[in-house]
Amino acid sequence: MSSSRPLIGVTLDSEPGTPQGGGYSRYPWYALRRNYLDAVADAGGIPVALPHCADLAPDILARLDGLVVTGGAFDVDPALYGADTRHATVTLKSDRTRAELALTRGAIARDMPLLGICGGQQLLAVALGGSLVQHIPDAIPGALPHEQPNPRHEAGHQVAITPGTLLARVTQAARIAVNSAHHQAVRTPGEAIVCAIAPDGVVEAIEHPARRFCLGVQWHPEFAISVADRRIFAALIETSGSR
Image (cartoon, rainbow, N blue to C red):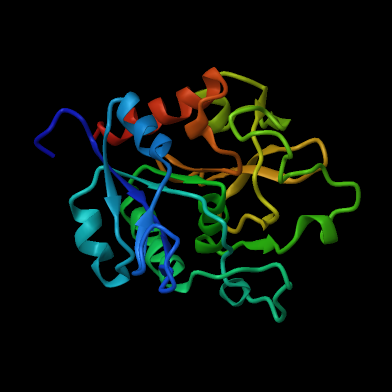
């Protein structure tokens, strides 16, 4: 890229609109919390929002230096990881998942630096052949409240980081406090390895050991509640700017 700042694609959420009125628009619209984009810009990247156009994924990726797959209040279709049933709590956004899956798989194939956040981490696991826990409260006895009751800009619990991993090198920490806003989790990581877990055993981060920077975290580092969160974005941008 011609700019000294790497161009980082950031995936958007979407809503169908409210024909009866009362919402942002009567027509379908994209949305994203601004702290996702601010985190990329503050770390030295140029954030660019990406539409849900799966067929454009190769052309989009050809113009990017890195990719952030964001979270949202929806789930990956269990059929994509071979599940025979769908939990009653599962909510789908099929167009978004189709586009994000195309972008994620394309980024992995190109060895493009990639950061998956919350649902983006779960999608990364599925893209790498893994599977998900569809509803933590029903699947893990005594689990922590991973949909934390306190605000998202505060910590919900701690995670233990696996020594010797990319995440350990990036964060320079063995244990960090994170926020938590999810009802699903990674069950099996596929080609990835688990690099952080919660005290109740829930997978909190995964990474692909054969890629330069292919990391998924279950929490939301864009809120920057710790130095480690800022270091994650800094490492993404640094790797995206190198060849």
